[in-house]
Every structure is written in structure tokens, then in C-alpha cells.
View 1: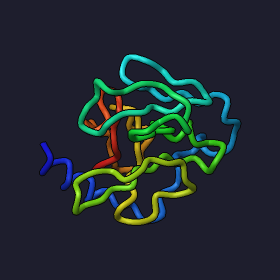
View 2 (view 1 turned 90 degrees about the vertical axis):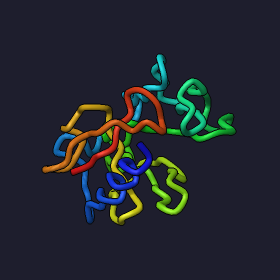
View 3 (view 1 turned 180 degrees about the vertical axis):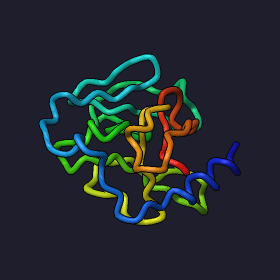
Length: 142
């Protein structure tokens, strides 16, 4: 599993990836981040320990002492430019952060998507399962 994940994540460099049409702009109040069996509200993040999906819980960003995930698709980031990026550390085989950004513009920045929603990904990429974050999360891969 890790080898496939590393290969997929490292193959995801997309240059200056911009969000699909219709995702940029707009208010933040519609933001919903899926988190285990819950959906986090606009002022919450999904807080979890990578590789331990059962630890997932919605919480305030400043209360998360594990790994905060503020977005799971471009819609969650519309207020900040429209792209949800996972910052991938190839040597550690882990993400160092997930954040909203204007672009995923280097090889260590992977677009995050809702599982099986290819519309969240750039043309020619598909949303593949991201097991480090638990059910429902994906990343854009060839």
C-alpha cells in the first residue's frame, strides 16, 4: 500500500494546478469537510492521526493536537483560491500538512479530493483513495 501511495503521490506533480471551473471564488460558509462518519462545520477541521482513521474527529482548528485537515475538495477552499493541497514528504512517506492554496505548484503539493470525485481533479487526473486520512478522502493521480 505504501509503495503505491508513494508512487501515486510523487507522480501527482501538476505544475501550477488551478481548481476546476466553478470552484474558485465564493464564500467560506458552505465548507464541509468529511471526517470519519461526521461532517465538520465551517469553523471546524477534521483532526486525526495519519494511518489511524478511527482517531478522526471534528474539532476547532486551534484545539487539534494531531493532524488538522481543513479541506477535502476545492469547494472548501473557494474563499482562498480554490485548491485543497496536501504537502507530501517523500522521505517520510507522510503528509506534513493539508491546506487551502491558490495552486498546488510543486512536486510535494498534491491536490486533495473527495473520493471518486474526478471533477475535483485537473483534466487527465482521477481521485484515488487516500488511506492515510481514512474513508472518503482522495488525492488526484494519473
